[in-house]
Image (cartoon, rainbow, N blue to C red; front, side, top):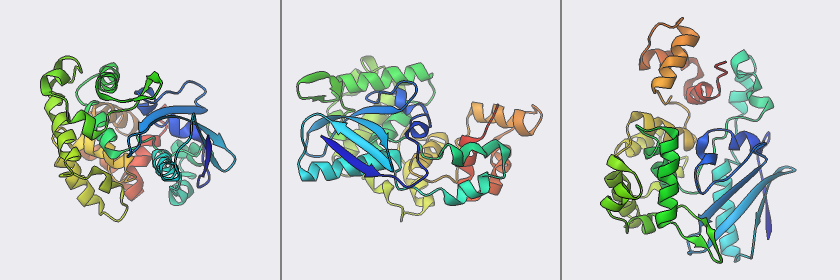
Length: 290
């Protein structure tokens, strides 16, 4: 079956896919020229579906095998719209970015949307798995979680969804450490899953735009395994662009770009983009560092 979802213009699927490395992490799949994105997800009722997303005039075409109930179609549409930020408005940013040579291509390439998972829970787990490791290590850990605890599409054992909090809550720390290769992150991920599955923690509520950004940041920093860098990344994924994820790469690039190679700290990184206000994280993210 096929679904069509409209997108606020300008919109380019390839720009969303290329926005960061999520497209390389299971159960996402995309290859150059990044005009198609595949993903597997488990719906709230337990159905596991493999979807293929392609750009269509005015929006996105969602293709999947089989059929869904009207309720499942509505849920799938909501989750795809969230993943791709279909209703996001970048008018202010594009208007101001056009006068900055380092950001001049942003509107032309419809950049700004950052690829998200179907749930905030999945994005928090992924983000925890990016800390203090290499990208190849992150890919291995995510793949292991999918294979160990994810559910497959009926009749297709190779199409496996990222595990829900309920499934991951049934894990144990030693298995996560040994088979999942999560190391010190294992108890953080397990506690996150257990708190989420018991409804003690409602991560999906963070999607609500009505929450003040300081409250969202406070809730993120209260999660074990989420420090300032991880919180800044998650704020970006949640559509809050007022914080810059400062790591060693950010320090290096800002030093070279604005300080002639002189070592800098967080203060210098933030002051370099403060004129962008609530959009400074996005300005940093999209800056042409070449």
